[in-house]
Amino acid sequence: MTRLYKPSRRAVLAGGTAFAASLAMPAISRASSRPIFTHGVQSGDVDVSGGMIWTRTDRPARVMMEVSTTESFADTRHLAPIDAVPSRDLAVKRLVEGLPSDQDIFYRFVAADLQDVNSVSEPIIGRFRTAPAARRDVRFVWSGDTAGQGWGIDADGMATYATMARHQPDFFIHSGDTIYADGAMEDEVALADGSIWKNTVLIDEKRKVAETLDEFRGQWKYNMMDDHVREMNAIVPTYYQWDDHEVVNNWSASKDLTADDRYTEKSVALLQSRAAQAFHEMSPIRFTPQEPGRVYRKIGYGPMLDVFFLDLRSYRGANTENVQESVSDATRILGQEQMAWLKRELAQSQATWKVIASDMPLGLVVRDGDTKFEAVANADDGAAKGREMEIAELLRFIKTANITNTVWFTADVHYTAAHYYDPNKAQFQDFEPFWEFVSGPLHAGTFGPNALDGTFGPELKFVKAPTEEQGVNLPPSAGLQFFGLVDIDGATQQMTVRLMDRADTELWSVTLDPMQAAI
Image 1 (cartoon, helix red, strand yellow):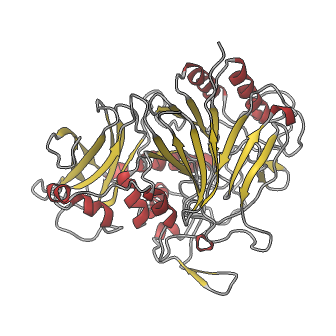
Image 2 (cartoon, helix red, strand yellow; image 1 turned 135 degrees about the vertical axis):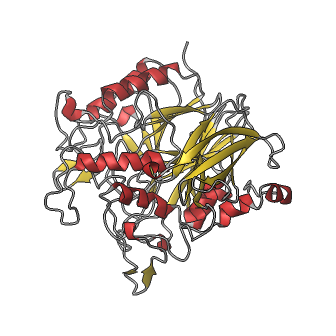
Image 3 (cartoon, rainbow, N blue to C red; image 1 turned 90 degrees about the horizontal axis):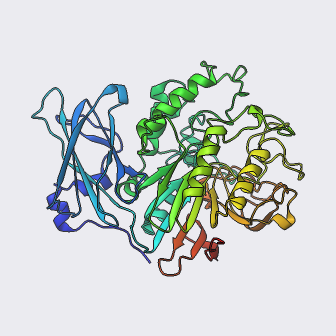
């Protein structure tokens, strides 16, 4: 079933061709006598009564904003303007609150040149739907890994975004590696079959690794030069996470760039600070007043769904051999504050389904070199050690607190899989069974499959990854680009998870029945 929004003729006329402009605008600003919106619009972190909206101009400008429940903007509500200024790279975003639930919301931006207030842009329009206050069908998609391993915008563009948009999901979870700041690109790449991959769109910021703030910003702007990305952004809210490639591959306190000749800036902490600023400027992630740079958060999407977005990057100890037998700062991956927040929010959740959106998988072995580990698992199949101890603590809490219907969604490993965690097959057994679903890449090299660690008893139910004959780092043109499609039925509250590929082929699916909490 296709539910893709298409603006009516009335909407196009009312918006001064605005919505059409948001779908077919130039990827980068051209010389103009009046302001131009350079990279489309985005919305994100939408809940029952509000959401974030975002855009960017080509010059310092005062950006006027309005929202409406009709595509004609007959009932328009004007918001206070925000100035697009160089200190924020001319990007503006705001939280729109006080919106009706389960309602299509149209938002419109108009920019006036700060040097000439009579020089006014054409309007640009986006759309999202607020979460329901009562039960109804809910659909979302998730995946990760955009523009990695040197595979940039080719003649087909980032086609997986177009495939996802055709399902018109309520929202999209980008599970991390939203950019590849450490992934310099070339104009052409020779493929194994003798053909040539051509990055038909490149900018200077993508020809080297990102070190300066402007270079990190450029990584984001590059992705939004793709037609498919901008078209989906205009109609589907995105809920962003981050992982390592937003900064540098496998970054933690142990990351050492001394011998990496690509970098003149060797401080990973400084690179992280610049990357975090660009992440928050260029995405419609909500502000957290108590901790402005915070990525972990909860979004309530009506009575059937709460989504808990984890940050396994910012609070971790250094990557090590990951076999410590006692808890310390060295074994943290969530960190004490995030763990306390997650326990509290899970315990308070009244939603049927508690989706835990994790930027890294739990049971898959992800290495950092020959002896260190990047994710949770340590490949010893034994009792919980290292970072596994923190996850064991969380799983034990979920069981003890009688928290039902937790499902994990993740990306990172560049293939798709379904894992069922069974305490009867685990070394650590003090938890209730749960599912973990893996998807990606969106537009990056395809790898895998990774080994599973037996500590938490994961059972492989499905996997789609390159064969040994195909090799690794397959380009997007090979077709092994993946996303997940999730439907929650408003009547039965069942959750159906489908693993999909770029061609929109359903590879595997499962329908989960909601459990009732014990009294």
